[in-house]
Image (tube, rainbow, N blue to C red; front, side, top):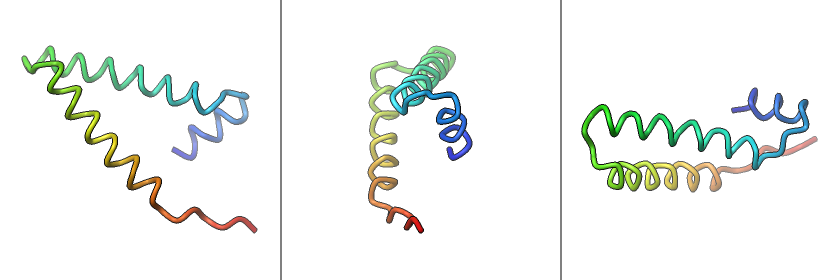
Length: 68
C-alpha cells in the first residue's frame, strides 16, 4: 500500500485515480471469479462490498501515525 501511494505521489497521480484503478481491477477479478464459479454476480458483489466496507472502517479507525 505504501509503495503504491509513494509511486502515485512521484508520478503526480491523485488518490482518486489510484482507488479508481484498484476498483477497476477488483471489479474485473470479481466478475471473472463469479463467472468461473457460477456465482450470482449481484450476491458476490454485495459480499465484496460488505467485506470492503469492514476493512475500510477498520483502517479508518486506526490511530494515524504521528509526524515529527
